[in-house]
Length: 338
Ligand SMILES: C[S@@+](CC[C@H](N)C(=O)[O-])C[C@H]1O[C@@H](n2cnc3c(N)ncnc32)[C@H](O)[C@@H]1O
Image (cartoon, rainbow, N blue to C red; front, top):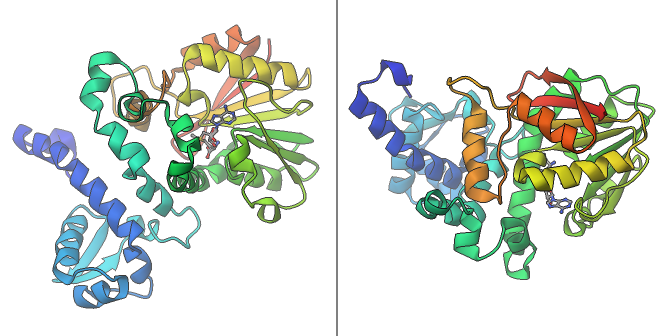
């Protein structure tokens, strides 16, 4: 797509309005395994349709559009190939974004996002309007188990993209017990432990998440603990990581979580909050998108500026030490006891 400042105003508005078509189609082709089917090289759309169990003409039209915006390539009419972007939509590559692509238009997000006018009028989240409850409570309901599975896979997929950047940007080798709060399926913790040879790890999340059959995959250095971070978190760690946790909650709720961390950690322990840090200027930044996702999807969650992190940490008896940028869009907010 063209850069905004190079486009006539009408084209800019049209491109923005058509953005949802890109999202929806990208999500659908990822779910149907189209990028995987192109793994061995370009395919004519008829063969691609056969390989993916899709309708030939429908697939051709969708792939033509997605190639036009650079997600796929069309080296000759009707023949489609992967690009560096669609390589990431394969299910079997390191850093795969396939599950994230599937999740972003699944019912848990698509339906609440459909309530954006209500969100704007009231400031109340989309899940409250659509489901009558917050999204994490909705995920815990039996009828929504499949959505919970999709969400957790997406978090791992998202995590795989940034966890290595995080582990490279902050030296964790001195720590002996890492605790990942709301750590999902443990991708970050596993990655961090590779850089902290003397450490063991504790993966803490809601019981439904950590009780899933991960024990073998996580290996013997990781202990799984189920519970709510609003009640208490595992004690005795010297490094607590919270990746994409703080942005899910209001200031009051974040202070409650961070107070529990401050209480549980060793006196000289370190807290690493891993988030997109909102810049104070008016330029483009992924934090501005994620922030609106938090507006739509959570009860008071948002992306925060460095100053807001400092204030939040202070209320929980912690002190911001430094913000470490990483090669990915996320930063590491390092804190310790005040
Ligand atoms: C946005 S996800 C982030 C997951 C993981 N840290 C990552 O970056 O991939 C939020 C996580 O918080 C967990 N969570 C939500 N409420 C929780 C609670 N009350 N106590 C513990 N974990 C909770 C969810 O299960 C989910 O794994």
